Image (cartoon, rainbow, N blue to C red):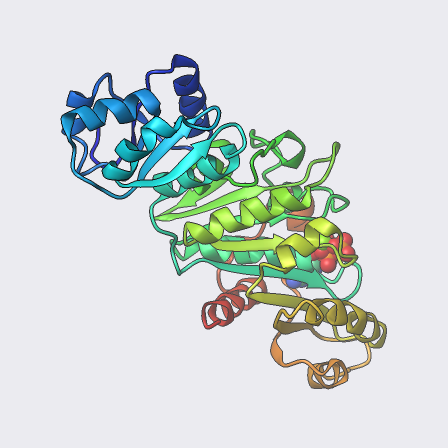
Length: 354
Ligand SMILES: Nc1ncnc2c1ncn2[C@@H]1O[C@H](COP(=O)(O)OP(=O)(O)OP(=O)(O)O)[C@@H](O)[C@H]1O
Ligand SMILES: [Mg+2]
């Protein structure tokens, strides 16, 4: 038993089973105690106390002092007789199951995770035209987070992209992709994602990867929202590779983004196509940073693209030497000084300035 775990004094075995199941799904260790005497030692320190009617009466008999974080859990409306005792203990809320299951799962997950971090950031990457280099750059940003010794969550939101794991050269790594990830309850803990999903570690850094697969369905909007929010709450850098044609799932990521990176080759047609993509991003109120890929075939200047789009130019990016061969061989470049890595670092600096 640990002081920072919530405690349950619940006599109804079926209800207790439900609570333990909900807690486990929320990644929260819930301690059960057999009687009020055992609860007394945890009364001041436990972050939350779950009582059923029997448990509340037991606590009342011991005259435990009032505290915050006391929840009366029931499978129907609690009997009026329990109110005076529950209120004297400091009742915060009656949790009627199964109606309040969702709320309770979220509250337990909050307890397991601790207070949300304010360091978490979300960046989404999109191409101004097909094949612009957005997915490769998303993978490079993930790689840059990893090599900087930070925590990152790379999320593939393009079910027709062939799988971002293939771009990273990690398609042989076992672990769930979107089709195998079944999220319920609209919430997931970052710790559960770290435990379940494939990823890489280096120094103190970790990159967790949630890729689409070669078969099966892509992500659902609620699932994208849950995963992005889990990463943000945990203080991670969340990187989402989005398709240009915004699906509901892509919008779920975009609506949570601190920054959208638009990758546009220095070509007239790419600039024209990018204008429409940019419009869809700005109408959702998200700030865009423009990355122009150079050189263009006719020497179009990156600033001309930026002016035509009415967007600030974050940086330009020259071709990564040997990239095409490296990708085909499943060797995502580890060069930390090439154009890709430099652009990724510039993006991270801009993201953390938001
Ligand atoms: N930085 C780069 N340097 C050189 N070549 C690149 C670079 N980025 C991408 N490419 C080339 O462009 C191809 C397409 O890149 P990528 O899949 O990242 O584009 P995309 O914008 O995600 O395309 P899609 O429209 O399919 O989502 C790569 O397979 C690679 O051949
Ligand atoms: Mg792509």
